[in-house]
Image: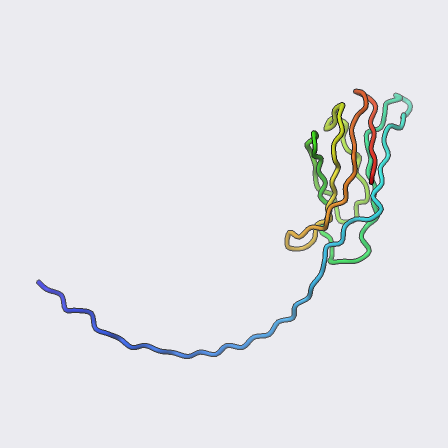
Length: 134
């Protein structure tokens, strides 16, 4: 049994669409005035305080959904913070006698992030912490 050859077909169509949209550009501004404090002797147990980083909220840019921080360069760990948080005490268990980097980003819509702000942190001994911000 033989099949008939396929027939040639000519097809054409036209369709016009119109649309409009409003676009807006924005940036996720980074936190400002990053500062840190560590190595304070706290009574009554007289233990050394681990590094605490503080910052000011960005004054402009798109709405933040929060902040992300992480440790690197010899340390690991991190987490997320709320959109109005302005400080984090880095848990001492994440640190060792060494120097590392603290990095903080502001999070915006659509997974966008700000440029990072950074500081250094670490331990001089198994109980004495330090930190600095450039």
